[in-house]
Image 1 (cartoon, helix red, strand yellow):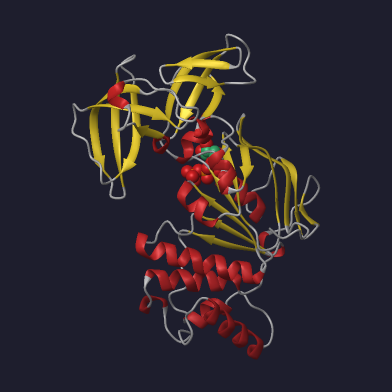
Image 2 (cartoon, protein in one colour):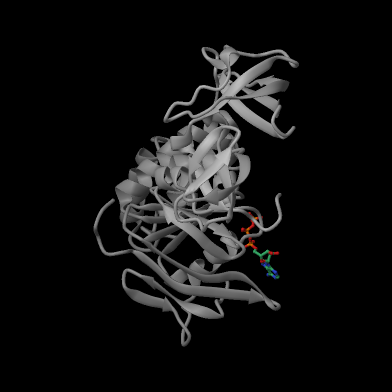
Length: 364
Ligand code: ATP
């Protein structure tokens, strides 16, 4: 990540609708060429945050700076067109009566020749050279999206705000457009705030993920860190299915049917949840039939009965009913393996890959 001064800075942004805060004390800093994804479930406040930065919603409290200059604080709020922000939404609606070149040049000021040069430059950037004279209805969905990107970039916004911009595109198109978009935005040095509720999209696009819940940012970090070191159980669950085993910590260890887990930092007697992603639950083919056999990484095997197995292509998702307490656990195993329901198998946990959290008050 570049060490440049942040292009976009947001401090303590808060917005209530009625008594409830929709956005609660959100702070962010995004450098030139950096992509930050606001990721979270529906209703967590992502769009409201974006709308305040765009200038179409006024915060109750908070400060927004672009390239160090205040565009919104308690005393003032610049209108959207004075903020140097570009906007891209799912419904990007090109002007149907204008040509591609006309659409891209729409927000540009200055001499005709300069505008034409900028349009040509952007058409080349989004890989649509020679498309300037066409009309939107002559373009595919993906081509229209690239024109929308060129239009948003034309006035050289310092910040690009994107709200689920790719969700209207079919899967085959989406990956290519995402990559083109990233390349262009990085080349222009634009700071990007992208709103999405899809973890896969955030992981693919983001330099930094800001995970939101209930109006607040609950975790910020690189996709790698947020996935591999989630702040809590819900953060872990946002990225994949999870398995949860509950136990009580004694002397920094928690005994489970899979052996003892290290649970340092939890008080003696405290209830803990051990959270395991399905890909870190392993079927023990070699030793299982001979029963428990502890190893430092994988611990003890426990037996379960296959209830259901779904072939997913590269992987199979196998649901087990465990002998020890009748609970359900789900393992993701290579797709070449698809056990029949009713098969008894032994499972082990990659304990270097699981997360330990204080138990939620009510088991979910
Ligand atoms: P989604 O992914 O579904 O778009 P979101 O995370 O973008 O959700 P917001 O649209 O920011 O969420 O909404 C956050 C909360 O604020 C929601 O509970 C929503 O109902 C509420 N809200 C948003 N705009 C308004 C408004 N103008 N008036 C009243 N409540 C609002």
